[in-house]
Length: 462
Picture (cartoon, rainbow, N blue to C red):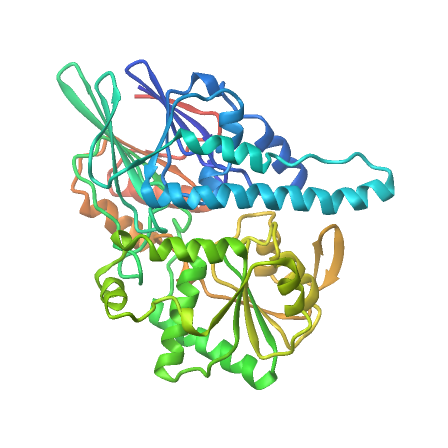
């Protein structure tokens, strides 16, 4: 058995891990790399393997940094099966099309500027036609039910608690009378968060591929995060300002809506106009409502009582460009939730362009932002940022609420490992900035485990 580490090594984007076992080539995730625009396009345009050589893709969840190169994979000759949960398939159906639409729109917008300067034009990474052509390769699986991959290899998808439909992937390999169990956490969620079920805890694990987004950090409590959210909203109400929330359309948007609804119901904040400006978020929220099998007990009870946990009653969803542009003409107080969460593409760029120069406004970051993204530069409160190639002075306040993160923190990751009660032969630490991955690996080694942080391109022979 060999594992080729081909993405999300000492960083958090572009997850791709190729496992060779019993003559099969199985790919774990196929995500887009995100970062500097030129480097991003170059890295995403060419896959580090022959797509036609891959027998199966096991997809942990629908976020673009895990699924976003599937159209490129299929266009390049992949003819295997993409296994994922039913909710993940439904989300990919809208998210890959949306990603293609954003790439086409951004390319068109930038090409108008490039043409005026006489510079070479750019091409989108993939088109909506490419996204459509990839969907027939998807095959929905059921949580906790083995899927045969042939030649003594089976996969089982377990709850990850990260976003709707997210899964840890368990690979069981039978050879020479022994069963080897490789577990890939994908993005591991947190215990006790609203809407989704808690992550499954595996047992008898031989090898572990573990994410480390927050491998050396500890989140504030969810209750404290809601209190801080209430303080920010009430501050905006007093100043009649706008709160712009860059949020992933799947997961983070729904969690923010859930918290705002709870705060309104408790009287902690008034009914401030909330606009979700992302067609993808609108569609994703509908998919959330169609998959109650992923909900935790509290959310199922709310749904059964006809009480929406997603604030549907007091939230305005915008779909077309005209409605989106009109938001920039409205006065505050108001809350605009828009994608993308790392501020790298989509309508959020236009809202930031129109609000970031006003000191009354607030940019609220509620999720992880990778290095070299606009979101990260906002987190670091840089005084000048570039949007669509032009510089803008940042006068708006920036607030960060990491407790809304759907990633387990250091304490939660270590608790998860301890609860596995497994004699793990080797941990491979991925999906984290280098300092986060190294810190988690050091802690695991201190506890007596073998743990390493592979570089991109490394191959582990087990």
